[in-house]
Image 1 (cartoon, rainbow, N blue to C red):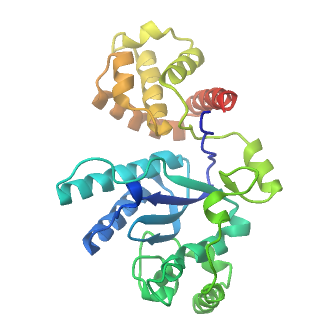
Image 2 (image 1 turned 120 degrees about the vertical axis):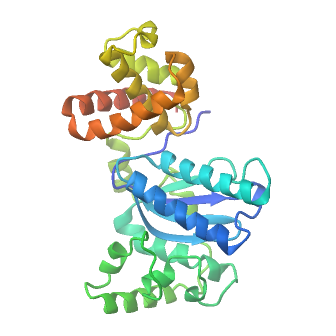
Image 3 (image 1 turned 180 degrees about the vertical axis):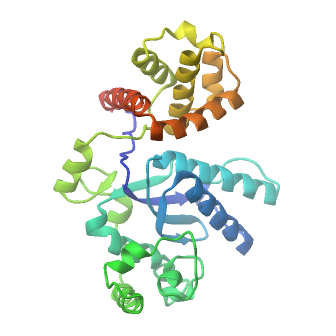
Length: 319
């Protein structure tokens, strides 16, 4: 049975878990952790998402990520790929570092953001590494307390739920975390609700997110589906895709396909390259330019949204 597609919409909050392949370590030195920090920061600058909480354990990572217009698969797969490349280079090895498909639970932020932040930052305490979360240097907890500054970590949303005054908010946040310091593992933060394992929220929240138009592309989307939907939307035959590079209309269609392939998180430009007769670098450049155009060209935005809707309907029919 095919996996259900990721649920995506701008502003969605996810609890993301990245685990080492076979339970192996993914951090071997402080320098590795600082490199991971750098890659997270570069990802935020590139994809315009936010990280509200994080914890780097030895064998796994927890992140609370609020996405923008770019879907979660592209964000996490870029991060995992670049960090794996770093570790393989540093340790003279090859192969996978992370375990299969990363785990991500869509969270009702209004109901669970505070508790999720606490849950993530208490990981080292539950594991017996430290007695107090502020003694662990590889989570966002110390930044919330004002003990250090992590420029890419967004703390304002959580702290504003306690008080508009920074000192009062930090004090209340510390007390909130302390209340659960002796608590155990809470299954729902990693498994979602019983109704849908992708989502943590009540039935109203589930109805809301499952009933709206989904912007992201899931892992089950196939290359032929993207090609077919784009050609249909632009009234183009597939055999025209390898035509002259001077035909602006055909070039635009190839750019849309390349952008959707990158959005999918599961397909590659090399696959598309064989279908349309253009090299990967040309397709990549076209996709980057198109991403900017989508923000300003209303007609292009409408075309892309129609294609996404068609692809989502195909994915739902396969789920």
